[in-house]
Length: 123
Image (cartoon, rainbow, N blue to C red):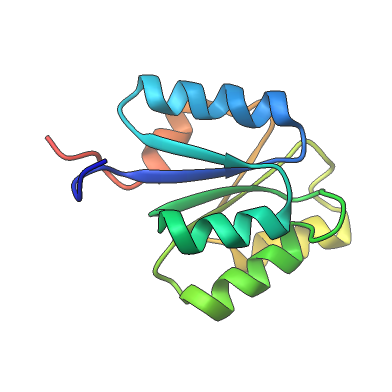
């Protein structure tokens, strides 16, 4: 991993979904890591220092809303936060999360749209 790499943390309690998205990101030149719960995401964010975090809104324990609050408290706007959900977007915790993040996407993720959100990869 070099200083020029764009680091992306994918947080989803559905391990297969997280690993699949991380794999697509890696194939497209990003350095991707996964976490499968909010507590792991907080620990990994501290070590990995991602440029962007894609976080599932509905997770057991520390859900996307709480994770967003904690990440904003620790990193401010230094990390691009992207909420991802397969739930209805009018659910209160989902809409509250959407208000706090930089961007949001619905599942299944449109990778072309995601690439417009991610920090640019170095040439």
